[in-house]
Image (cartoon, rainbow, N blue to C red; front, top):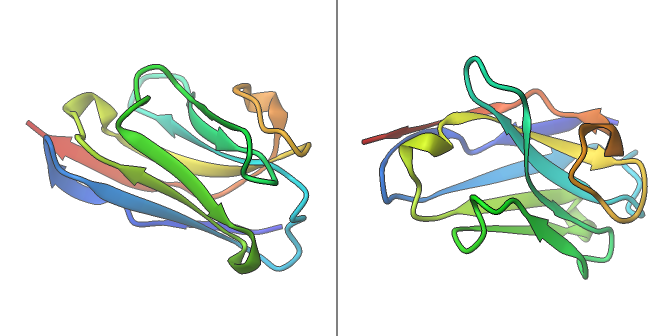
Length: 123
């Protein structure tokens, strides 16, 4: 399984970005997927996840209401729409494929990781 994250960049506070995560054809369509992020000097943290069906979505409290996760199973692609960005959202964002159909918040819930895309929010 290969994951390719893209869409990061530099944006001013209050702006928006849309991240994409394209999975190789070998990615199981029966697995959940998720987004994590890691700021310099900090541990990787959960951002959002979506189940294989799209019916179960979880957000971290600090992005709830600002970020929207979605997936296009036919295209094997997951998205993260990020609005009202804040400087504290600055991090490398990683996408991942979960071990099971429902994707949780823990790092160990995920079996495969992409290479990450940098998001920088200026104040």
